[in-house]
Length: 349
Ligand SMILES: [Fe+2]
Image (cartoon, rainbow, N blue to C red; front, side, top):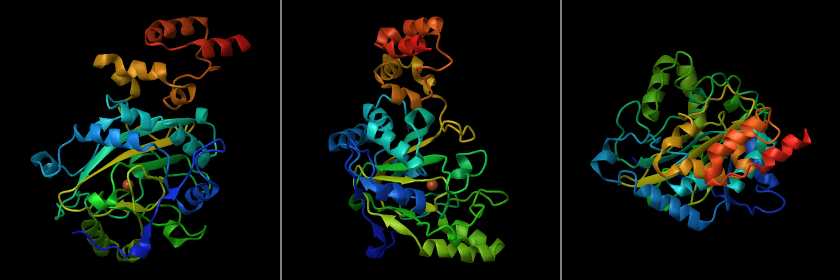
């Protein structure tokens, strides 16, 4: 089922050099804001990427196994916070948080994490019905992320990303994106509802199933959707590359090399005030009873910025007073949490 892709339609990651002047460069930021995506390399060290891949690979079904064969490939079994240290490190990596603030044009204190999971996907030669994800239909992600509809294009509410943990050469299956070409691009006409799963349109994942459905029930839309496929560009990914995209970016997963494993890390951060964007997780604190107390240690070791994106009250929050500071110190102090910043902010009031 692997399709040959015209090399001129492949996108190479743009190298960035995080430093004192920020994480992303102007071109990457402009690409995300205007075209709907930024594909970059250089955010993470190679050691972290290798460690995360190797730790995760031990905890998922090996390619070719019965379990891998029966999976449609939806992730969710490896989520933040995790006993996999690399998963936590990537999720709260200063470069990642910095990039999110640059894309959203906001402070990290005004950003919240809503999704962080590893997604193993297994290559197969055959499609297995309308919900199969091997050769996805072109879609946008907002329907299962938000209660409403994304705000107008110029006011993005969230950043989605795919961190690739392996190379395309070994697994295939590049993500396809449709670059937005200006404010009157017909592909990005408003509202964005012509995608399976919205309104009365059934949720279908498989491309052939979805487009057959459209051809039969909405022939006009089928024609328009064909134009999206024709404009696809494909990320030529290497381990450590990151595709930043949005809930209103047209994209899809494409067929992999049969028998191969593709491992990626999916994350989403939203503006704190956008509560209509759901947290795709049972709740960070649900891990607090886990053996080894890894979540408490993570919280205690985290920087103020890292805690902020989890919703931990920031210094100066109305939550803090002498009593709550002492109480939280009683809970998290044994793991080394330093309450000084919260005390100092209280003293300043
Ligand atoms: Fe998607």
